[in-house]
Image 1 (cartoon, one colour):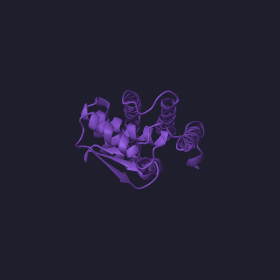
Image 2 (spheres, one colour; image 1 turned 60 degrees about the horizontal axis):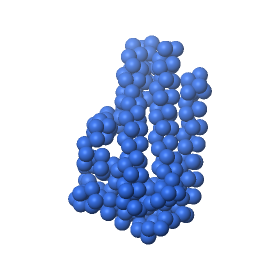
Image 3 (cartoon, helix red, strand yellow; image 1 turned 60 degrees about the vertical axis):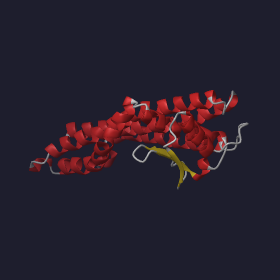
Image 4 (tube, helix red, strand yellow; image 1 turned 30 degrees about the vertical axis):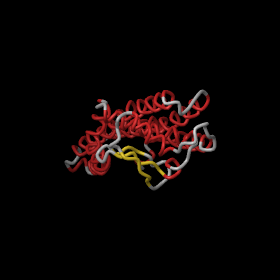
Length: 229
């Protein structure tokens, strides 16, 4: 009955509800501002291209990718990948999200330290999140057989995932700040238009806060289970 332990009730379930709230909020805000259009007629792809060129990043490509809200910057290929609704649309949501991904490209070009640290944690976080729970629960179930040390290894590995989520916050917040600055300075958005784009980016940022909350909740739960064992 470990699934219903006190750590699950005290930490994980509240964090999961917060994550659901964040996902619902970003969906609602995106839907609202994807129906509002600024004075500029440029699409998300066109704005991203111009912002990159203005920053001297002509070598960074802007391409369309599959999915919904799958937009991201690929630092290895130096490509801004925009989902179809963002790539070809000129709504406030599209321009805000496109500029946010350009913000990541600017971070990469300027050697923004938190971005470099986060990128270095990607393999560790990926391995840690996959291996942590199997190792922990093998140690939890068979600790009396001399495998209790696996719980500590699992916790240590999961810590990499927590650190990754923590480092992600300043990276995402900074990319949004850069996006709003270049949209304003470039004359793409004004007044209420800029405020609308900010609301979209703030809602998206909340999902990263929620992801950190879930990771921390799982981490504290593992510690409680370890101490109880």
